Image 1 (cartoon, rainbow, N blue to C red):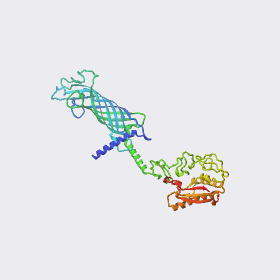
Image 2: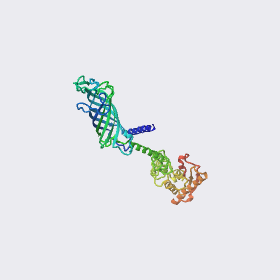
Image 3: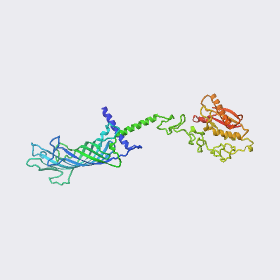
Image 4: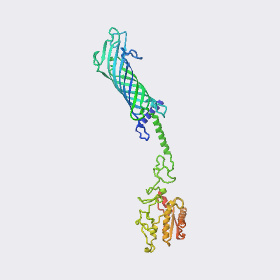
Length: 489
């Protein structure tokens, strides 16, 4: 019982997979031929009232051969299920003899029948559900066939032997021996059978098939009605078929296990992808849109490096992570300063300042002589802070060199001015440690100004706010608290 249930479950899975293949949209999807046409021909055997033996071949009289032929059109829905429209023209014959009642109209008689049947059948390539080689397409297939249709027939029944041999007894549908040849009796027909087919090439198939065709209503194929046995006939034939279409592959020859194996491989790859995170950013590779994110940087849900100000430069490379919205920036994320006055273009109300001029925080030129030298607060407002990495007092080129150059310009333009340099730290770590770290950062900035630009160290005053004057109060922007500020005195 368990094996039967397993076979049924596997069959449903394979058929479902076959249907799914036709709808799946993949880059490597193949196109197939679904239609074929063919010719068939073979032998017929009658089973019914006028049959001498239950088994063995019947033999008609007067050299009437039991046989037929026709044509069919196939449509293969998928690699397992198909449909067939079939037309068959043929002849039937049989006899029944007895010595007990030689004058009976239903014994010692023979019949000849010409018929045309037309059926619509379904085919099931059951071998596709049991094929052991799951990597190759097949060279042959076996299938079951069954359907429904109609048969149109005309029958004549005659005496078999005796003094009245060959006398006409009855006809269907005629009323006499010489009835109209164009008349037919139509009956329901139900075919069922099995076949085997071989693939000769990408276009041509050759096969053989046996079907038993039952006539449950009418009972007129042998001209004997109510004889106690339902009429039916067998049809064994060989056939040849040709595929119709421009493609090189036919759907019925596809091994469904290939698609199933591929689906399983894809599923396994997806599962593996969910478990893998090559760059260690916390986002699975299958969802990661930035597969080589540097270690220890913040990313969004799709694995992309955060860009807080939306300037196109990731935060971990951004010299100014809080650029004004819409501002133009350079490759380091710093706002452009077209006139090099130390004020970004988005804040500069005087965008064409002369070279070397002092400006306030809005980029407006400051005339020290006209103001009596009392404009240091405005100048301080135009000096940008520099930023540091976690637990570091090292001056980084990418975030600090150009800003320290602006401080140096101000100090050299104001020979008597002094500068208060204040270091800060984020809230991580002990308070005393952060105060010391702020002093080290301020000292590093002063050492740079003294060493690179030759400014007298006595003009600077060191101060440290430690963690007590944070610019950002959120954990997401602690980097702006790791800084040094410059104030002219």
